[in-house]
Image (cartoon, rainbow, N blue to C red; front, side, top):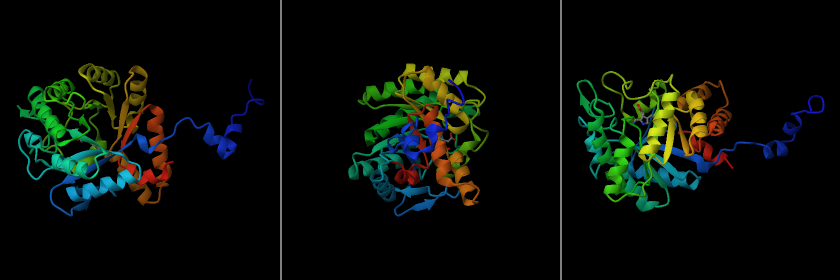
Length: 323
Ligand code: PBG
């Protein structure tokens, strides 16, 4: 049957019916809020390029976690801003490194919150690359060792999940092996499986102080033109033991999210990254768009594409508006 008997507008007119037939809904249960933790006390420094996001000392991160939990955001992704860096990033594997301190304090006050730790060396290396440099490039296999040690140290501190974001080959398997041997067989791994070399990470590198001191990350992060390769990355991570696979960034890669959801039967996460967040904030600040509507539309598109989990800097602000 077709027009004039079929009229799709019939389902759009009444707001109750429109809502009843809505196919995709975003929920606070799907959202993860990234947080940046630094040394000191009483520190709450706004990241200039990411309004509403702060570098916070442990005391303030604990407060922020309580606030987020109360408004329904029950999972956070922690990034560390250390006071000292080294050549390999091994400082991050010390049990009194910044993320470990934060994890212990948060868990003491709020054991129910779900803590995810980003596993990578770039915040902890003097050169800002994601691993150990040999002959001007990141050495894959040496880097696996620092990542494995960092993961175990985070696990000992009490994180609920680790999320390797470095894009070294074989890191999921190496981390899984090390966690199992050291007594953490139940700790899940959410792998940044398809992480593209992207200009959308710009504001994050200000927030985390992790810009590469020379060159770029194109020898390890993916070429944004590649979709088949993303599927290979995901397949390998699943084989190595990933429990959740992630696509990053989200918006310019929704086709990858959708394809991942279709091709694999595993939970898919998408990271709505700093640059995507800051573009919305900038447009809203100029009065060029309605921020809340933009955010709802963006998050809905990521969910509709197939993401089960959305990591987003919008989580804190949108939470109270979702029901
Ligand atoms: C690296 C890491 C990055 C992000 C998350 N983990 C930056 C990078 O690869 O340069 C970016 C997140 C964002 O832009 O919001 N460890």
